[in-house]
Length: 437
Image (cartoon, rainbow, N blue to C red; front, top):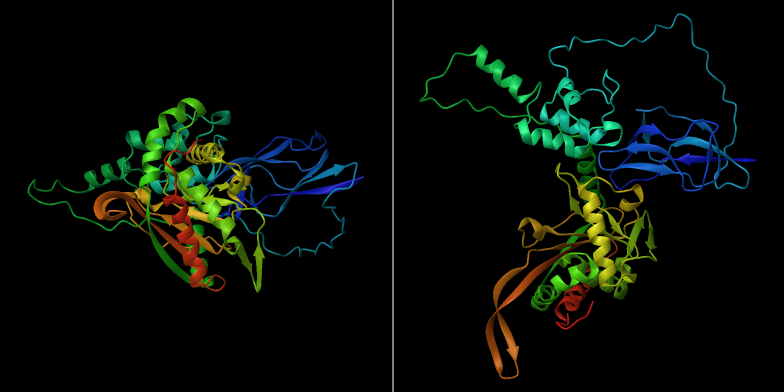
């Protein structure tokens, strides 16, 4: 017999902890390989943690609603064979606590009139994920209001979509210290009516950053402090790509059951370019450079609450265009619906962000540590351009975009960073209008 330590897996570059939402197995129950043991929630992903071994659950270290750090042991499974991580049973000396040591007691504050979602679990026994809690806190939604929302999640839990729908139907801008309606009514009753000709007094609004916002902020600042950021810009003629997609999109949908966007086409070109320049597929660990075997492309996606998440296309260079399209669409849909698994957002070796979707023609993105490069896709625009022909140069209308490549100048020199971006553009410009899928 041996014992296996089940640890909380890594769930993304900026996720450091998760909340236990439900235990799916009790102590003493038999567990199969890959069987889900516990449900967890983070500000980005609600997921299940599967078992890596077969055996019997003999110990659980955390209760429901407790917060666990990534890498912490959450349970112990007794196995029949050799396990990857064996628990060493060590007797620890427990320090004696003096009897005269004062007892720390919690201070209860009167909050009947201003009670907000300060705890993950309400007095009615309902559980609220960190994401729902942060949205409620930002929007000034009281605990009483939150409990009145009808949840559509498992066990009628309130999901991100539930609370956003509630806000859209009846809430206004974020208000600190209560709901917008409560604060408006309080101000109206406390102040005399102003003349119709006067303008309402404008006050600065203070908005607290969410926990995930703070983590992302730290991640970005740390990246700028760590890497020597340098950018290269390449203008690319994507007229053939635009015409090809317009030509095949209806047939592609009918034949493959998937809508084809520009993203999988760009991802295919980027994967090919990384294969040509493998030193772009590296990461830095102190004084060591790790050259990765697999090309795993991170695809930055904006969420409804303003946060970003980066699902990863694993082994992107091994996918054909149909496979790439299906993977991109699947990750995009599950990102928006909050159904990504922890494995979906880890293991990336190079990141791509589409700033063009917000109307930007170019950008200077910050590197996603410990990677060494990130490519921003600018918007596709119709522009006048010089067209070279055997009969001479002509002026015509072409579809063009700008690729912005940010790279770590500690390990990627200007030649490599520029040639890589140019190679991506070359693949896109050489797109055959008669390409089959």
